[in-house]
Length: 118
Image 1 (cartoon, rainbow, N blue to C red):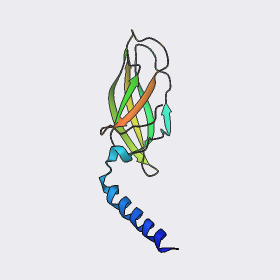
Image 2 (cartoon, rainbow, N blue to C red; image 1 turned 180 degrees about the horizontal axis):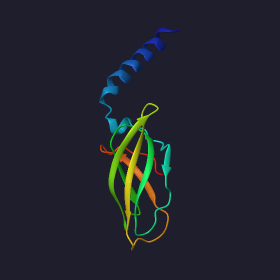
Image 3 (cartoon, rainbow, N blue to C red; image 1 turned 90 degrees about the horizontal axis):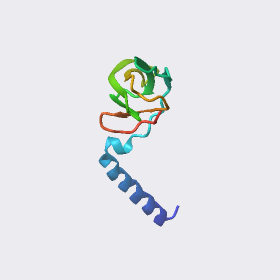
């Protein structure tokens, strides 16, 4: 390897090692892939607990869109298994005035790092 290539590689490694600690968690976090979710339908006028398996130990902050008539009332962390996979229980209240239709459940961390939509 020529001295010019060695010098270029040494500079690149030095710059990368200097910039690495400056990256905050929200910038470094990749979207999560939800491993499982049940049920996928929510009855109008009822409260339903959705079970979600996600590969994270961090606190989730789920949101539902469009949110008209649908609210997330509580989030409970369950057991962890197979490394970082964690069961989550998301209680969702659907009002009687909620319009039927498709909704999207997205979950982020308390630090607002993104999670893949459901």
